[in-house]
Every structure is written in structure tokens, then in C-alpha cells.
Length: 449
Image (cartoon, rainbow, N blue to C red; front, side):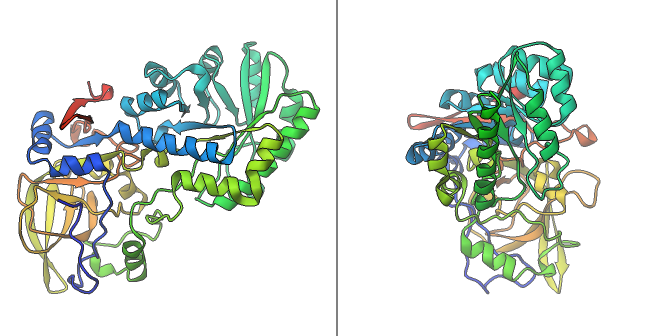
């Protein structure tokens, strides 16, 4: 069974969106092909749930490591923990030699609990609390300083601490980071027992060239800081490594022929994630290192390059599963379509809450023969706007009460960044799936116990 029924352009009804199948991970495909396991898990947890594949996280981490090795660069990967709270993801990072980027005491403690060493943590975020600064220093975590007063508060703790200074990129209007004057003041203010290890930046968007150019600027900051007696031997270029959710043809067909007729109610805004990303993840890191031979500049000056990917380390590492509770038929533009109600909310697909829509098609499980049925997906709440899929998806058959809808590749941000126990509904638990020989075994993630 595949993730979607592929149909040729022009064969679908005009009031139905074109198919947008996602390519599954091998473990996810085994789960979809299993005749019983999904239903067993759904019966055991009694509601919607998320499935995670930590082995895939390890594959993605190792791809970043391989890109560093191929370029001959000393590099390090910090997983952006805000992208997924699951304990199994943090454990996979620890076991794969990746660190974790945290922004709260809760995230720091959770990372330590899964075996990530304090020295492999980077603490980011604005205006960190004194408690977070103290805990980070105690565990020898690398601290990204975002403001002069934050540096003052860290110094007041009188603890050994390793820091990078977060530089505001030229031309950026971000509220985060130090402008050029503040950056110079911070360099001059650093005193023992604080060590200035280097500099960092974060950019919105997914432009490899911009990241490479800003990395060159950070190398310059390091060399000037060394002249003032600081080690300054690392830079961090943050995250923003794209994920390739859809093939080029599906993405182009959607963007080029986007129609309001495809949606139940108003169409979302145009702020879609770039669901087809031709140079994603570790390949994007390689492109950054190759641009103007950034790798040679780093090697020549003995500077370590750190990255903070979130979504890219979670590519194909999980899915979200909902059970159909109701099916009704409506008419649009003179044509019928179905509205499903499932046993969860769109808060479990975070993209829906940014005037956008999560585009990879859900899989209707189990597989049965039937006729193409344009279908949108609503949630089990009292809000008219609470829709998991506003667009009418070309499901390969009509859904029935009790069927499951499996949204693919949701581990990166979709699963839990916006979840809420609205209506006192329980949050969907996270289920960890492992291959054990010829069997698939599952357990609840530590966050769900």
C-alpha cells in the first residue's frame, strides 16, 4: 500500500485539490502495510496519537555528520528541541553524537534526562532567566548571549561559562541578537570566568547563500576577538535547513493552479512552507560549505561550524494518526464532497494555525477499493475553523467511521508545538516504533507515560 493514489492532472474534479503524496520512510511504509498494528495502537491509546521513528532521526543526524566529513570541516550538530518534545528524539540525538539546542529549563532538564551531556547543549532564546543561566553554566552548556544585560546577569553569577554572542545579521529587523555596536561592547566586556567561544546568528527562510555569506562575517568576528585575547574558535549558523515533503511535479501543480474551489470555506493565505525543497537537510549544509569555499576558510582558521537544525533532523521521522468519528456529504460548485470529523484537533497539525495548511496528503487506512472521493477533514471541537484539512483531498475511496487517517512526516513542528487540551481533550500521546527483526514493536514515549 502506498501513501497516496497518484492520478494524472485533469482527472480529478474541479472542486478537489490535486493529489500531493508524500514519500514514506521505509519504517512508516511497513506500518501502513501491516494489516493490524495501526488499529491495535489506536485501540490501546483510545484516541489520536503520534508515531515516531527514532532510527530515522539517527539517519538524518549521520547525514549532517557525513557532510562535515566530506568537506573536511570540524562541525557539530545541535538538534533544535522546540521542533519536537519526544524523549525518544533526544535519546536518538544523544546516541548519534548530536547535541541539543534548548531554550528553557524544562528543555535543558529533558535533554539531560535522555543522556545528552551538558557540554553538548547550546542554550538559546531571548532574555534567559537567571535560573536557566545558572543551570546552563553548572552543566558547562554553551550559552548564546542575546543582549548586553543578559551578559551582565551571567557575569553576576560568577561561574565558569562558555558563550557565543548572537550577532544581528546586517539588514535584519529581528528583535533577537546584538547590533554591531552592542556586539563590540559585549566582546570588550567578557572577562573570566566567562569564555568567549565564538559567535552565532539565525536567519529566517532557507537561503543557503545568505547563510554562507553571514558565516564569513562571523569568521571575521572570531579573528578580531582572537586579537583581543579570546579563543573564539567556533561559529553557529542556526537552523533553517529545508525538508523536501513533496515531489517537484506535485508542488508545482498545486502552486501554479491554486484555486479557491479546492477549499471548504475560505482558502488559506499564501504563506506556504516550500513543500518541495530540491536541496534539503544535509545537502543544504554541503551547499553552504561549498559556497565561495567556506569550508576552506573554516579549515584555514581552525573554526568549528555548528548547526541547529530542527525540522531537518525529523524528516520522515513520524506521523500523526486520527480516527474518523463522522462522515457527512455536502455540495460545492454542484459537486458532492465529504466532510470527515476525526477524534482530534487541528492544534495537532500546527501549520493549520498560521493561516496556512499542511499539504502532504493523509493516507486513508485500511486500504480498500473504492471511488475517488473529494474530502476535507474537520476536528472534534465546536469551532467552525477547526479543520485539519480545509482543502478537498482526493481520497481513493469514501472514508467510513472507524477508519484511520495517517498524516505523514509530521514530526517536525507539526505534532506538538501548538497542542492544547481544548474541551479538556487529552493530548495525543507519542508512540515509539522500532523494528525488531521481522516484527514491528511499539511503546509509549516517556513524555506519554
